[in-house]
Image 1 (cartoon, rainbow, N blue to C red):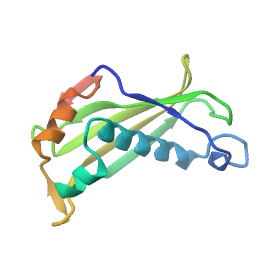
Image 2 (image 1 turned 90 degrees about the horizontal axis):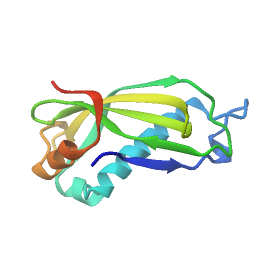
Image 3 (image 1 turned 180 degrees about the vertical axis):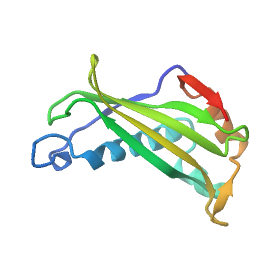
Image 4 (image 1 turned 45 degrees about the vertical axis):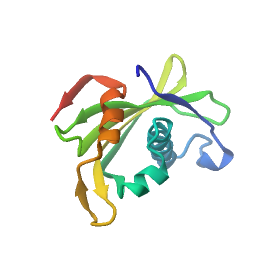
Length: 144
């Protein structure tokens, strides 16, 4: 898979008093993109629940480059930046594009898989590993 990208709908409720997208909404857009990615490749909520596994974040960082306003044509992508050898930990990068030429923000997240029954870090099942192996990667992707 070369690319994963989705359209972001900017709603009136996403705006701050300066009429551009509120900073916290960028994180929401990225979280939605990650879950849409998993679901598209068969790792739906029921599958994650059956396997008693779910994603957790340790760190989230946004670098804001250009304003996004109501009515802008916005797209967000997902690329895997790194994975641990057992795929238990991972890092992803999202780019929000205001239009095809304007990079509006970059969001980087570091996370892992949690066994939802034991509430401890977990190694993901094979089907999840396969999705991450096939996922789009950043130019500086590495196995840690």
